[in-house]
Every structure is written in C-alpha cells, then in structure tokens.
Length: 255
Image (cartoon, rainbow, N blue to C red; front, side):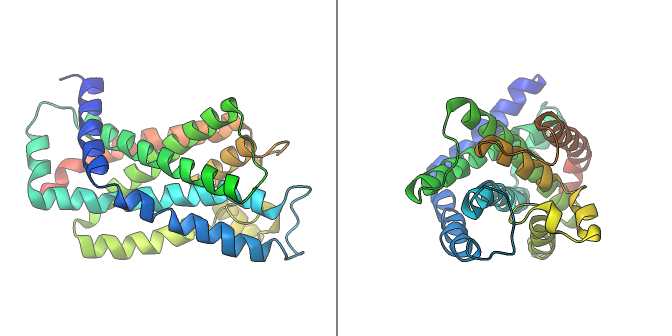
C-alpha cells in the first residue's frame, strides 16, 4: 500500500469515528465562546493592552482559534493509547502501511477537527459582531493554517503518547505542556508586552507562528511579527520533523 493511499485510509477511519459521535466537537465550542464572551469583553476594557486600531476582541479571536486547535489536538494521544489497549494499533502495525502514513493519516483527521473549530469561531465572531475578515481567500488561508497547526500539535501529542505510554501519565504531561504553550505565545497579548525572557520562549513556540499567521489572515491591515511565508514555513518544518520522530516511535507504543 503506497503512502498516500494508506494515509487517507487511516484518516477515513478516524473521521468515521468522529462523525459517529460528534459530541466532543460541539462540547469544545463552549471554551472559545467563554473566552471571547467573558475574558475578551472584560479585557477589552483594560487600557494597558495597546494593539493599535484593532479592537481587543478582534485581536484575540485568532488567538482563541489557535487555542482551540491546540487543545483539540494536544490530547489526540489519549485516543492513540486507547487504540493500543483495544488492539487496533497491533493490527495497523502488521499491515503493509508505511509507519509515516499511519501518523500522517491521523494528522489529516486532526486537521478536519481543526476546521470544525474554525467554523465555530467564525460563527461566534459573526454573532458577536467581531470585525474580522470573511472574504473567501482569507478563509481559505485560515483553514490551511488551522489544518497545518492541528497536524503539528496532534503529531506532537502522538510523540508524547509513545513516550509515556499510559493515559494517566499522558493526562498529567498534557496539562503541563498545554498551558505553557498557550500563555508563552502571542494568543492573548502582543509580543511587545512580554518581558525579554518570555519573548525568547515565544519565538520558538510553534503556536506563536500559527497565531501570527491567523491574525494576519483574519484582521485587515494587521502586520505580523513575521511574514506569512515564514509562519507557514516554520509550521511545515516542525510538522516534518514531528512526522519523522512519530513514525520512529509509533511501533514502540505496543512494546
């Protein structure tokens, strides 16, 4: 079985499970709604946050979308551990599918989940009358970034699952990693407000590049900290590295 065929076969299997029980997707809509409706409304009144002519809610919306992508993808490893316990991974590993294709297929399904999160954020933004861009080209760019970001963090999650191997350890480490990734990024405040040490951490955080790309695509006239090309290039490079590592570690999950 070739790489592409195997990847889409795995993605199709994952998405079938998702469509059979979409409860998780809709339950995840609560968190971004609360962030925008409560946190965003309150902090839009704080004058210490200077973001030019952009409203704080608009500034924050791409960051909350990136947060939704991160939170949905980072616990993807839990499902992988469940599959191991149910014997699914054993069956996949004895198939002729390339190991990289197994990982890539899961990343594709995570990308679809991410697009659902994007649709939810756009709907919330529309209801709250948050001034973001709704033109087709911008939306296509946002969806591309969301798919790539979901692939990056779901693959990272798979790597963690392969290392820790148990649900209990994964939940603990997942919580430890998720919040620093979020707060050590430009999701809810600009890089210019960060102390130098935090800005240095943010500069190597993949979430920063995802937020930067989404902000440039979603808000008119926004100049990112980096170019759109650089943001997508960094995310792509991280994804390639993660795919390589995850493909090597994936068989060790059953050892």
